[in-house]
Image (cartoon, rainbow over all chains, first blue to last red; front, side):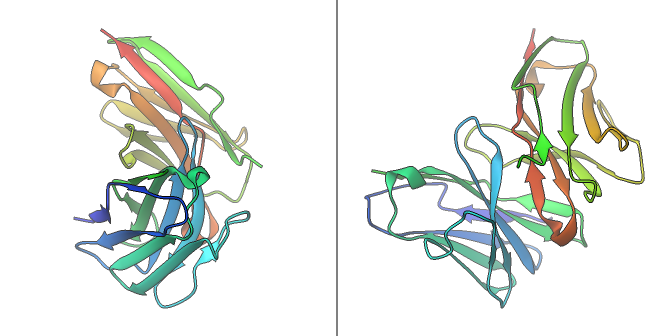
Length: 115
Length: 111
């Protein structure tokens, strides 16, 4: 149980275009999801906290107009990278809390390459 | 401000020996700590966790120790196996359920 499906697993896009990444909880309801990004050989950095039915909470330094997060249902959160640039190329991972407070499950990640 | 730190970027251990991965944190409000194993281009895989009310938690070959006064935790893997080779992240959780990750330690277990 507690599976999070993240899609796509990898995407290449041109500069200036937008890319949407989906994160679905398959067998549980996720009222809270988190979005992380990871640059090569670096830590997973929390970008934002996504709460179902409300606006996402962004970490300091993360541009909310560039990284649009929508959590319209209890099983789906999306991250849209708008007007992507090569410096946005990174590995993006979502996670969700399940069974109370301390169970975290992660998606398999999305490798974004902007050319 | 790096609230969770793993100061060793890499560790090499012989198969069968003990691997000790260390992690330090600065925020005394953290009350739950987790260790994850990660391969490139994959999401993290949960290994073991510990609540701040405990100082040790054991699960098979994995043991996590927590020293609250020193704000330090460590993951012991014994015996180490070649399949344990991966990047290990420690993470801490506090208010709001957010996980803050360390920088990771790349473990290499040599046969």
